Image (cartoon, rainbow, N blue to C red; front, side, top):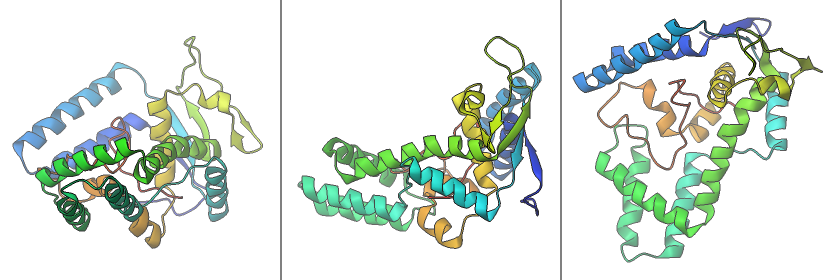
Length: 263
């Protein structure tokens, strides 16, 4: 559950959060292969937790005003997150520009994948979509540019979130092995502070912060990607196959899903 008050400070340990997520996914797994796969991941993460003390991050619960400031800074950085409908539209437009001999069948395949994107998608259809998206990327049209926009958003948004809402930490080490200093200036975490974090760690913390922002119903409908919502339903044989049109949701290190909290 999300905390009730924006005055709360939330302690967050990425590997413990990852372990909890993997455990829930294992409980929902319906095949022995999936269960065995999750068992291996759980064992690996647990060994990493046991090997050394884990850092703890103190996170602020964003208020409405603070979320607005977060969105302002994202926009100022040029970060936008195109929704699925926009991506599929651009993909169709780029295909029509290329005009392959089997254009009609390719457009029909895209229609089918888009219609079932929130359900159990046929693996063969996903393979076909992957080939289509490779063709569109090579064309260098709108689809490739919008995929780049998504990837840029996924890289920038966690940094901006940490600037605004990361309040402190314990157990983070500098390159020389000493305790890493934590500095905030004018209610913003300093960039030199964030430089002590590895990229995967920063992304995990940033996406956790964004999970504390309750997205609107419209944003959930328009911006949530099928691949990022896959873990919200019972895993299936195709659940582990990611649509190539979608970004990797949370990093594999955090093993969590996050709908973009702001565009």
